[in-house]
Length: 342
Image 1 (cartoon, one colour):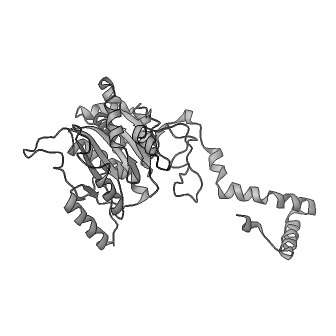
Image 2 (cartoon, rainbow, N blue to C red):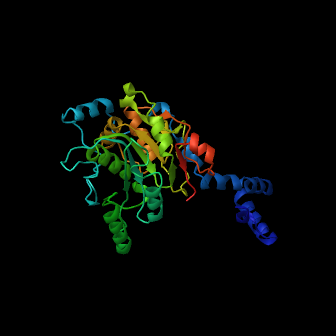
Image 3 (tube, rainbow, N blue to C red):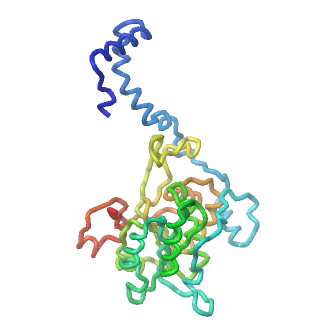
């Protein structure tokens, strides 16, 4: 950034002469010159959008409906009376809808289902998960299952063939036909929730995880076994973030315009990468997402939908969303999720 403002003496004189012409005198030109870095900062980091954002007190995000009542009516098989904003009926290229079924087609009972957000090229990450925390019989008497959600990359037929071969061997990939891009993360979330609630109805808990996380499956199962069954319909656990601010810097991949989201803060949300849900909550979230205006970033999209459903994320400090150095004692006794350095 310093090199941006490095100029030669001759260039400086030329610039000052130009400023003098437009400002009328040397003092005015000098003041303008001193303020140029501030003008650059305001422009580069889009400070105006931060300033113009509305207080969260006025939060009212489309669709403007009473979401709890709407979801309740849909669960009663009643017509909603409003049109969906999101259609997630994409063709599915790879799937295994019999993973959680018996030979007779009945739903198997599983303690935990890992729904893992991945990308086509992340074969090594998926292999590491299969060999470590994603093993299906890692914890005695607590059956687990796993699926990976990936998109497609048109024009990369060789990559697609590798993914198809991988699925043929492990039968654990769900691949809907939409682009495997950062801006489709919320579609991956919807795909995962749909698969979990429709194809694995016997799962008691659902963990939605990024493929760059490491999970202590033992600590996770131990924690889930301590939860009160009376509040099973409220289980929505994550590393809670309060007063998160939308990124307004147009140079950022995570840029959100005022048109997309006009408020100063996000609703309280589970930090990206790891969230634990009961199937009851997952189903309500999945239904409500169809009637909520799409945002590409799954963590804040989930935050908006859960806020409209009056669901509040339950904070767990052992779900670490920041990359940390591996610590044997902390991992063995405390950590449940930890972001890796891959």
